Image (cartoon, rainbow, N blue to C red; front, top):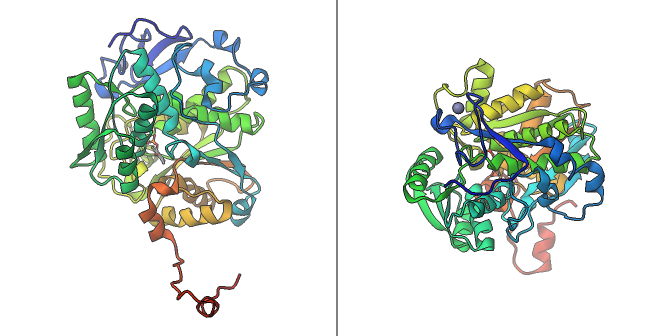
Length: 421
Ligand SMILES: *Cc1c(COP(=O)(O)O)cnc(C)c1O
Ligand SMILES: [Zn+2]
């Protein structure tokens, strides 16, 4: 799938394992010397980019979507954007939640508001554009659910067919989205890791454009826009820490890439400490980080957690994710499923933001980091809420301690069961 034209502001595609540099388009996905581990990182000509984008130019830019950062994204100038509004999600200050945690400043980046309900839209919009540039006519991905829903939604908006591989255990709401958007859906009798391998084989066999996380080098580029937005929304003053739920590790790598871009361009003076939150039952990266082990050779684990979006026995972007945490002086935090479930109503009740389990996991991680003394309550933090609570209603119902009151349709019945308000 060698493409003819390549964006001129991309200088190289560098293998994150061997450091070998390739021309853009030379290999569409991975370093040929390193198989599926040879994830490529996109390198840019920052001198050129500097002419087109800066905090000053952004202050006059009225494109209220992630495309306001287009000069920093790996697409040609004339590739059409799928017609759904992606990005520029709100950053809310959360004073009541901060107070409950004994903190002074805390913000919520609300990516539950993306068009298909998760941060994955940032990457999937880019996938459709790269597929168009490559002249592909079908896109495929494996997913725990949200990447698939995002791809299916972007493809529906753009009029491109897509083929999806999800584990048969994917939450119903996510499968419902796929069906509504008209994707061809394979429910794989196996784990996400099985779905991933099958999708890679199918893409190679049938010549489909491959959006897979931790394989397609452009996905972290889409996800990095969340970092640009956080910095811009805070007036280019970065927080001390950013918490994000980690499965494959692509989002945290994207956040890191965004801060690296901004540092290279001189937009910010320092990088926040990136905090990767993992469920106890899906803690591959936490284990590797604690042991100081090599993420590439570390054996896969059997992942099991209520937070399906961060369930990954062999995180595909594990090397980049580990680097993101280590290079920024952050850390991984490991939390039990119950703490993740508890974080859903806590976040919803103190901020009005309703998250799926993985989207609430940053709050559970923040609580843990504070309790363990791994950070000071005087530090400022952003929690990235990566997905909407409507994605997994069953988990929420398990998480809530309150039950609705069934009443006869009479005022007396209401009075008899009146809460203290
Ligand atoms: C995909 C996803 C994550 C984790 O992202 P990775 O890149 O797999 O680490 C977290 N939360 C939600 C809601 C997601 O969809
Ligand atoms: Zn390599």
